[in-house]
Each structure stands twice: as structure tokens, then as C-alpha cells.
Amino acid sequence: MGDSLLQILLLGVFALNTTFSTVLEGYKRGAGNMMFSAVVLSLLISFTSGNIRNSPFIEDVNTITRASNEIGFKVLSDLPKTKNVFLSPISISMTMGLVYSGARNATAEEIQATMQFPSDVTHAFKTILDFCETTRRKKPTSSLSNGNG
Image (cartoon, rainbow, N blue to C red):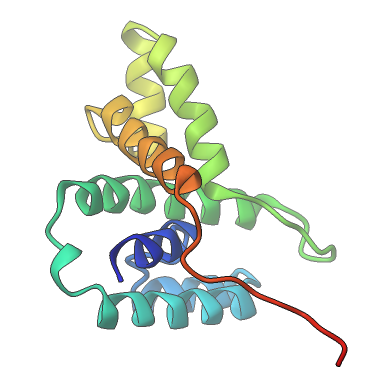
């Protein structure tokens, strides 16, 4: 249960910790269908996660997820409502995390405040990326076959 569940958790990083008020905000901003799916995924994860909930990995993911959710909604609200748009809040956060890592003084403070990054954002992203790499290297425990009998 552990690794595959954490993989699902990472795939649903945008949905993690979504509250009802956040869902309503998503509907107001035109992201209703995506948010419905996100809430369903979040509920499934919360009901099945069991003993992994208090791990340092989950704390890092939660911190980055909250920041990613906020910036994703901010960007989404600024985009035209008449077009279909795809965006990746975690990609935006990771890119700004790289910029933040090289920034100093006032620039670093402004990025941290805007992106709502934790003080140790580098460690949080490293934890997430290390998990992704470890998961990628593992051999799948199940396979999908297709045959025309």
C-alpha cells in the first residue's frame, strides 16, 4: 500500500488539503470540474493513507501543496475565462523554488512571501524529488496485458 499510495498522492498534489471553501473558490473561478476531481482524489487519499500521515515526507508535501494551490488559483484567476487552459501549479512552484534558491535579500523575501514558501523550501522540494526518483526506479508490482483472443 505504501509506495503506490504515495505515488497517487504526488499525482494529486494539487488536490491535497483542499478545503470546501477552496472548492467553492475554484467553482467561482471556473475550475469546477477539476476541483471536483481534486476533492474526490483528496478524500480517497485521506481515507486510505493510514499510518503514513505523520511522516516528514507528508509534512513536506503538505507545505508545498498549500503554496502550489494558492499560486495555481492566483494564476488561474488571471487567465482568460473563454479558453481552455492547462497549468501545473507544482511546476510553477518548483520553477520559482529554483529562482528563490539563487535569490538574496529583498528578492528572496518577496519570492518567499508571494509563493508562500516555507523557510526550508529546498529541503521540501528535495524530499519530493527524491521520492519521485526512488519510485521511478522500482519495478512495477503489477502489469497490464491486452490480448485479442
